[in-house]
Image (cartoon, rainbow, N blue to C red; front, side):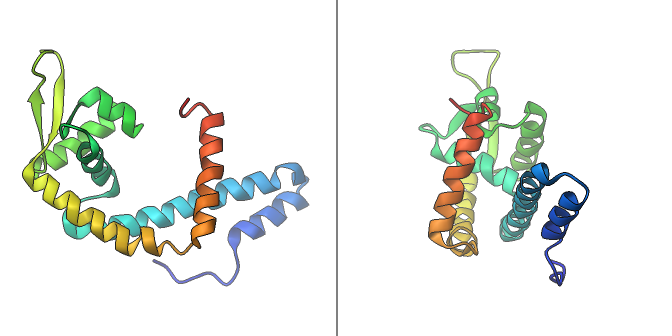
Length: 167
C-alpha cells in the first residue's frame, strides 16, 4: 500500500465541488467516492490475505457460496445470481478454481442442460483455512469499531434494497 497522503483528497474534492457551485451534490460525491475507495482498500487487503491460498476474493466467494450450500453444489446459473456477477465472470473464476482442483463441474442428475458447480475435498480444506485467515486478519481487524461496522452495514443494506438489489 502506498504511503498515506498528508490530507484527505476526497475532503479536498468535496471542497472543490462546493467552490464550483455543486454544493447540493458535494456530500453525495464525497460519500460515494469514499465508499469506492474503501471498497478498494478492503479488496486489496482481502486479496493479500487470500493469495497464499491461491485465491482472490472473487474465487473465495465462489468457494464460500458452495460451502454454505446444503449439498456443496449449485447450478452455475444460480451461483451467478447469488454472487451477483455476470456468468462470464463466474466462468473465469470457476475455470481457475477447477484448474487447481478446488471445484469441479458435474452434470445435473435430472436436468441434462444444467451443470452443477461442486466443491471438492481440496476446496473444502482451502475454504476452511482461507475463511479462518479472513476472520482473523480482516473481519475481526477491519479498522472500524464494531458499532460503526454494524451501522455501515445497515446503511448499505437500506441503500442496496432501495436500488432493487434484493426484495
